[in-house]
Image (tube, rainbow, N blue to C red; front, side, top):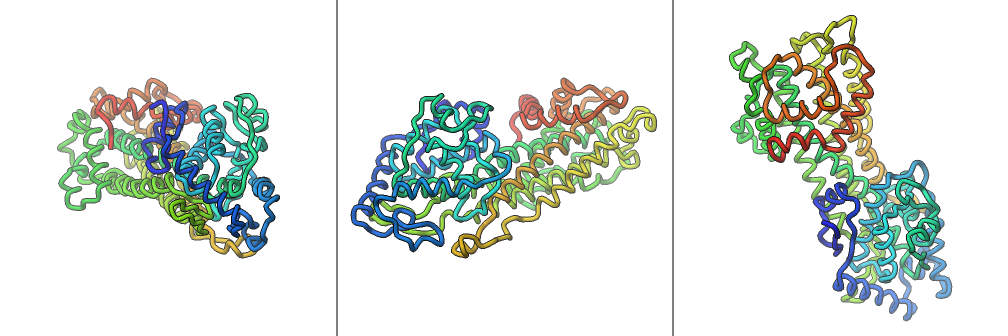
Length: 510
């Protein structure tokens, strides 16, 4: 895919992940979409011509909605709105997330229910296609009337104000636009409000997290299978007959992945008649735990896919009837609940991973040298790597507290219930980062455990993962600085190189 056609109706996770793989994909809209945009704008222009009172078009905002604005001040009203609302603080969103926020805002506007001019949409598309990203502070949204403050920072760029990323470098927006040949525009009635009423910041953060989580849950299976081999576990709990008696779809998918990863294992075959009766839950219950996360992510994807294609500003324009209706589509509650659920679901992947790490480094449980050190005592091996994993999962337990149960009144109590959806999405992003580090530690420990299993090959998928990791990380023959190993492996997890090696060997994991 080189170009993505936006219609406002059919953007999905497949397209999100394609853009993550290839950020150079450009966007366009077709003639039918442009006609919808024009029809929507005519409704706004007609209302202004009749001098109808319409919220945010010729009135103030929030608590000031009863203040009517004279015609000569309507453009200034929109400019003032953007400037006054651009009060976000803190570190900016990363460039990728900021560009997704821009993409989602464009997709919402092209639905034809926002009343903006074609010029505004064409300029936004040009900004996106020329590779610019607005500099958007990550703090300042309460998740209803949408992501007002951060979206205002995005809208500033259209005015030639604020900042943009051009490549990795921050530039004043006026300079950045000039460098790529884009002229700032003057906002017309309704357009400022159409740009900042919406859920695109929380949705963009959640979309990127979901893409990482969908990758992470497959890494969880890979790490678990490596640990099963290193600990001389059994693949019996992954029998499809067990899944059939409790037909949770995620369970069956995880069990199939585990069977494929462990297929043709000489290590498993070597101890098939051993006296061990059952493995610990962190090995035995992989399908149940990893599967539940899969089911949760499926629900999150369904919710976010709706949001990718939703009109979330206020008021909304209905061209066929000529109506302008105020509502509350900017309220982020659906995204807030989904993002909280996603954070909980991926935190559990790290919880069970850390328990597998403990099984690997504890000689009473593993039958391996203490902390996987060749001369325990003189060398500490992965002793404190497990401590780091424990620290990360404990932090995730704090972060997993739901943001969506909170609310605080704003705008003189006119906006008296809010979603905190952006908080929920940003928390989920931090949880995912911690989860990826825990996986990196488990992969390191499991690979080291496999070093003690002689010349017997593990399952085909496990062997592919082991070889990919060993290309970057040598065995731990004596103590060395381990944080560099962890950083290398976490980058392999995030870039998907281990997963690609596995899937090249045994086919795509579910």
